[in-house]
Image 1 (cartoon, rainbow, N blue to C red):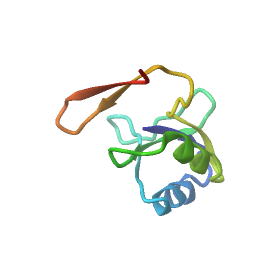
Image 2: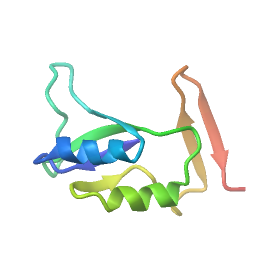
Image 3: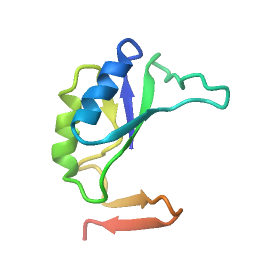
Length: 95
């Protein structure tokens, strides 16, 4: 899941995310430089367990200093596509 974080202090933000039990990696381009958003922030790719309470995780992420936004669109979508390490995609529906 993408998590946009302030460039300043991104390592401390990544550490705080990892203290929640998730793995995070700075998203980089092919030359190894950090990907920078339109607002000058960085993106962390955060790995979560297969099953999470998205609303709870979203709230906990937003409470971390340095987190701008996350890729959990809680209450905004009826269908979610979940990508897995083996390349498969799982379709989850609210209905």
